[in-house]
Length: 132
Image 1 (cartoon, one colour):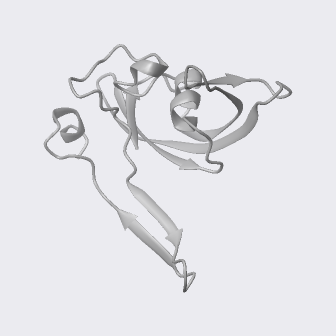
Image 2 (cartoon, rainbow, N blue to C red):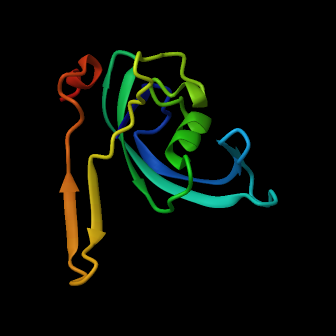
């Protein structure tokens, strides 16, 4: 889940882009298909709630590229709240982004049974409190 300033045209969808990482600056940029070195990146998104100019969005990664969520959401809609590296003007004292892994499912290394872990964002944070 992540928070960013609302600019969505649709409440849900799939984003497919080609991402290229600049190793020197550690920034990923979105390109069209065919750019040398760019890798295909795909994710589904769904708007959960909007309060004022902030939108809570759920993202399901189909691929797992470096900075994928940050780069794609910034390119298509708006940067994640407090993600100054990808264009947000909102800054936090501790430089934390409003990007949170709510659920993680992975196979157990031995039994191969799927294990699922969930965790809500920090309830003491005023911005997250608006949504939870």
